[in-house]
Length: 320
Image (cartoon, rainbow, N blue to C red; front, side):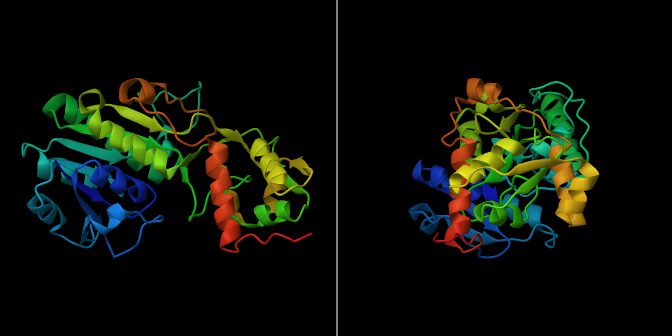
């Protein structure tokens, strides 16, 4: 089987390419530039690399069709228009499977928990989530009406070594990690009980691979791709103090006061969108239908990412 991965060298493709190549799939990796994966593997030296820019190449679909894929894994589709181009371009061509990367942001705010991956009454909060959800609705309709062979996968906050993870403030500022590493007091918004959803890129890739190998169970379905457990802002901060060998020094501030304390309006907005849709995602469906078993816990994933920060001197650790 020939698999084409769009956006192959990112967080998910880094691990998905070796899974496919090592299991005998003819694999084509599409990227906009000759970027390297976050972690090297022998499979990356065997895979066929193709440079294509979906946004700026008007012949993208035709070039994709010329590759004659059996399976398309679409990891960088952020617009319902692009989803429609795929369906219109490959409908009736004998495409075996189309796997669409959505996001936990498609869920919106929680009413009951855990979130239901099959809930079609979701109310995403931002344009990114709304676009992802629009593609989800469209693909499910196309599967039911036309038999278009699609699967939707909704990763949590993809994390791991080599890239920026969501911190105990719910944004990507390095300041909170450094303050904790220095043993300083930090403040969390509200009571620190909002929930984050770190999942290792390997495990998200694993869900995509399992959906390919469990095609009959995956067609027309949506799956959450998460770790087995999640973590609160408070639990994350407390764990970081322990990681750096300090007693926790954590206080809590109401939202307006916390935003003044944080001091960066963009980071504050980033935090808002992460914590306002705080909730719990279930992987029971993913485990039952796809036989998914996460390799990493959320804490293991966080620790690997923080170690990478230290190794790259993004967090300075005192010798004392």
